[in-house]
Image (cartoon, rainbow, N blue to C red; front, side):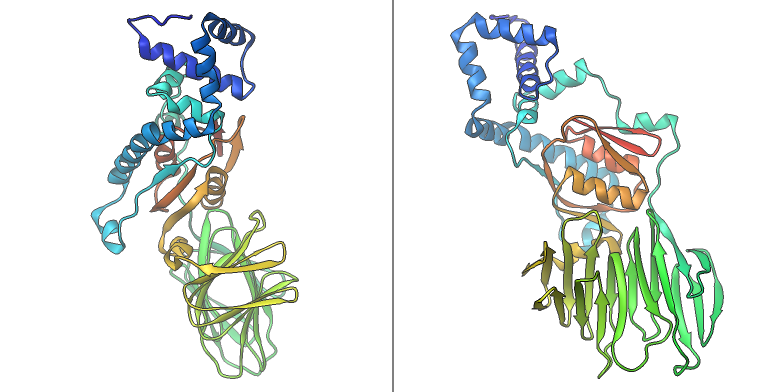
Length: 399
């Protein structure tokens, strides 16, 4: 193996890259290990070449020269297929691009021109769209939720439902994927209701004070059927966007957990507090809010985001459009790695991500519509070299 076949120089180099990558990931079979040893023993140049693959600066320079153009081309082709001109007119066009944060073993397979071609030939994988032909397509989420009344009874809600629910002094109107509360007797004792969206669902509710709340998938809000004197308090899990009605002497407060609250004036803001995310985020679009956790408080100005991690609050400028992209029917990936993307897909498509082997270390930047079938989203990700296949409602992610 010391001298490449002059008729197949690229295939030879691809094989070398593949073996080195497998070695770095401790995934070599016995025959592959013997093949790599024979190649290393063939010439001193081969051993020096092996050392280069372990040089992070060399890998970084190669990644920049080989990987970036092809990835951008793949994303542009994907976006051209799935996004219309109307989508581009809503906001400045943002390009999906793949960036590499670590120069690890996975990089070796992509570094050498044509290496991905070799891997695909040696381990063929059909496009995601073709794999889906044998199973029911996974469609995006819809407007659906469960309303739990104070007495524990539940009502299933969807976009098609139209009804009026009587609850004490309140009339609850369901129409067009939204609930709206009308209060006949504001002095009546309020009851606590909870609106919960499942995975694959979202919903909107207009609270008794006129505050509008959009719930993302796998989220909930608990609120009274009437706001009496004093604070207006609600509790939220998951992700919600709120446009709070300003009422003098009646402050509005969002309770996130036992330690964290958000005090609100008349304002619009987004809270993201999923249990499987490490950080609670509050993003202020307009007005003013004060974020409290433990004994620490920070007041936000429009265009700022507070991130709470391990009891600490960090405030920084942010892109508010990105924070509420889900409300406007888009995924927005801001340097999102593959697990972060998978968590969003799990919630919206009601699927599960299963990882086989090591997770490719890559991050993505950009936005894409949430009304696409899951296969189309995976097709776009797969165009950058990430390997997926569907098994039932499981997304199998492969290195």
